[in-house]
Image 1 (cartoon, rainbow, N blue to C red):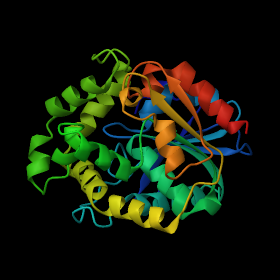
Image 2: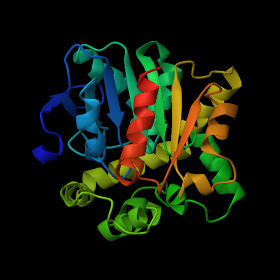
Image 3: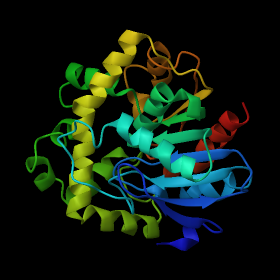
Length: 297
């Protein structure tokens, strides 16, 4: 793995009920813990522009979610449980407990944001602060897709049954999707070292299957979990920041902050950053400032 992207960090792999999870860990041992969760189709490497700075003041744990990077990628069950975000959130809590952190802050981008907010809803006793990076609640995304034909087609295509979705998710297809989500339509924001590691993952059938299972869960179990939480009136009570890219979710019919405030995070504050969806790599300075603002609250 590219050590130079995380200078001073150690590598840790620990067992959980869903399989081994891998992370880079750095920063003062006694400092407040901050776990960083990436999204599709990346890994913990997406945090490299911010991790060294954050580790000056926090115990930073940049984690590969189940199915991604160097973490386990077990066979799924059609989205019912294995890759459900409540399940994955519980596994992150297990991992953090083994590192000695019962309470910690969590920042999640994209699919990692879904794991992060489910953690804040289902296991609030473990979450000190929450950062949601360029994503909406799962049910809100599906509302948007159903109201706007053709919006976010990969959410529907990747949730198709096995092996239809897996067969269509080639390296070229993923790269085309990534380009479409950047502000300038290129791959220029990505470190070549990190991007080659992403590509290696995209070539592995077990990871492609995991990606699709992640989206199958998003189309079924995760959406049902949102409906249950909304009906129960559950909200996120810890300090929360919503960060989004002006050229991606910033172009939607409703600001991400307004969406989160009317659903699960009524007291959240928001920061729009330049460029597109990959905020940690496209707008690292602005994203870092927003995260440090959260951690100071």
